Every structure is written in C-alpha cells, then in structure tokens.
Image (tube, rainbow over all chains, first blue to last red; front, side, top):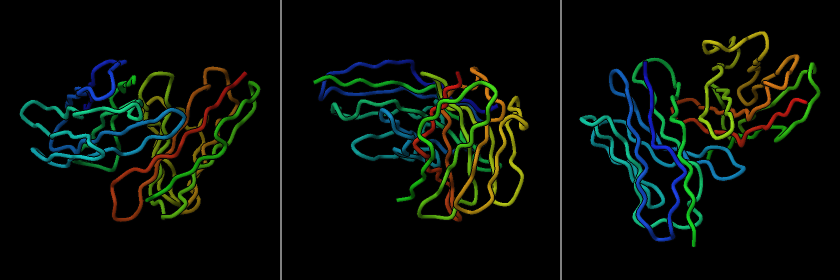
Length: 113
Length: 115
C-alpha cells in the first residue's frame, strides 16, 4: 500500500541555517505530494504541493521537488527563522480513488535565535 | 482562503459519556469531510470520510458504532464519540474539500480528555 516516510525529529537549527527535511514515499501510479505545517496549537496548513514528476512546489521560502526516480519529496529552506518552528508533515494522495491523504509521522523543527 | 472551524477546541468528559465535536466550513461548501485522530507526537490517522448526505466510509479498525459521523449539510459534519473511555483521549482533526478542488483544508483540532 501507499506510505510516507520522513526523517525523525526533532530538528534543531539556529536562525538563518539551511533546512532539509527528508521525505520518501511508496505508491503505485502517480501520486500527488504535499507538505503540511502545524504551528503550536493550530491545525495543519498546506505549505506546498506537487502533482507530477519534476514539479517543484514552493511557498514562504520553502521548496520541494517531486523526484520520481528516487521517490522523494524533500523539503528545503535556505534560511530558517524562529517563526518556522513547527511540525512538518509530508503526505501523498494516490492517483486513484478519492482524496485520501497518507501522512508521514511528522518532523518537529525548532529554530533558535 | 478556505476556513474550517471546530468546536469545541478542547473538552474534558467522564468515562462513559458521549461527546460531540463539530466541524464547519465557514466560507465554502464542503462536499467531502475527513476526520483524523492524532496521538501525541505522532502523525494523523484517517478515521473516516464523509460526503454530504451519505453514510461515512470508515477506515479499517475504526469502530463506526463508537465514532458516529454525520454530514448533514454542506457546511457541517459532526463526530460523536460514544461511551468515551480514557483510551479515546486524543486530538481529533477534521478537514474538508469543496467542489472542484482536491485540496484539504484543516480545522484547528479538538483535544478530548476522558477521565
């Protein structure tokens, strides 16, 4: 079945450091891929998405490229801020059926001044 | 943007009682709503999917008689945890999609504590 694996956290960085959160997936067909962010005490927000191979999703300085050859969708940001501290979830939606999302376990990011 | 609200944001109840959680789409018509459960420091697990006016589709292992879902209108879905027990304590999150979009918009979640 479909699954998502993302790197375990927590990830602790200093402000302005480079961020990478790894995400790999297993799926049949051509899934859509997503990154969601959950700030403390809030619900999930869609951060970015990519719907086909080689697509790059980007938002708020974050980027992720849909790599079919490596079945990956790693999240990157060149310079993190304290306000980026949150839990980040990688997710996929299969190419068939309805809008069911499969989530990774989440990676907690803590950015210190 | 699309906004989804949940009520209450947190609830504490005694074991054996039932608790109802509401999920509302505030500025769009939600043709499909999803209910998730999130354990501490873990991912979201889909419990069920509901389409307006239809019975919910439950994921494997989720007791439909314990977690009653009603999607009576295009802006409201409810999850009722019946005869709650301490092991039902969790963070319950809903999401919704509208006509013509496949993006899920998430509510802020409801923290349930069963004593």
